[in-house]
Length: 485
Image (spheres, rainbow, N blue to C red):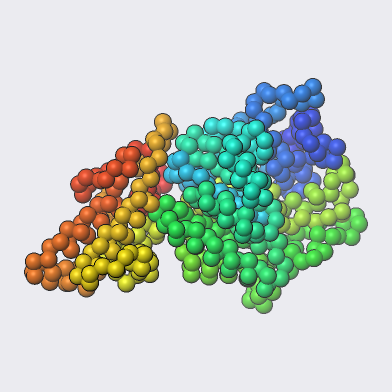
């Protein structure tokens, strides 16, 4: 039954004469693997072709698989490693929390696979407002200009809640172009590493990338989020790719191996394992959120494209061996998106806690940075004014004045949950000051707490301790209270 549906999918693919690679590629699904391997060629045309559109005399009506195949069983494949769980809800469970924000997925070819899977998931949920565009008239003018100046080919898709989803990649890390696009981004989801074959070069790249993300996020800590997806597990002989690993003897099929053995000596020589260890170290040191991915891919030696890279009508096996790129299954990518959602919520909560931490711990580096930017003040009132300045910076960043949309999900604000817990040392000092008639310190802290915990519509100031955030905006402080439904 599965083989029949696989061949039927390829027959339909061959009849869709719109595809640019029709002269070289005759299959979008490899039916000679177990399970069949679905590639993005089967559905990626849906991102920029509207239903029923004909682009010319040779353009056939495209099959809308992402929109129509709602169940895992509709796809001509299965996933032997992942079982669907109730919290696997697709990428919309992430992007629904970020209305009217710009989200950028950037990195190597695995990030482009993630981007394609995200678009397919959004089409399945009916959340795409405009067709995706890679160039020309389909993109807004600001995206065209940004793509030209940065040198990065940017996919642009707008969702029903105002999210602007950008996608780009395929190559090595380019900090100059990245910096230009980051200036227009609210949430960045990055990964690089598979194009770096030397440990020293890979380490230098990762330290530079994490430092750039951390610096970018620190400029507007209440509004920006920086996430890094863990590297994937490759399954060449010895694990990670090495020069010439994709070449096999003529006529021999591609064999991707179980390279993750959990034996210390073998893992120590696997560059994939070393890369993930460095990513986790840098993430904890820079405050960049980490999206789990390595463990999900470690066992997927049988879910690579293998000999699919043998083009030429896909007749000859033994031309190449791809143990890097992943076969598509909706349940696998929904598992990835569930991990992305957890990382987003956890990282946003930690950022909100850090904003609150600035007020209660005057010696923190963030508060010292604000303090250094102020003109000289008398010693008596300096700490109070520094705390008020830090609160204004945090409140301005957290409380964005985005216009509400019809599909925005309002999340209730719990002032008690977002209010920081005072350290006992500061509580004793506060009591001493009140006894000395210095109640202005307590009042200043109360005003700062209300400014961070709540925001008013159209950028107005919150009134009252229990003021709720306006509909249409989900602040990062509020993400602490979100639970899977």
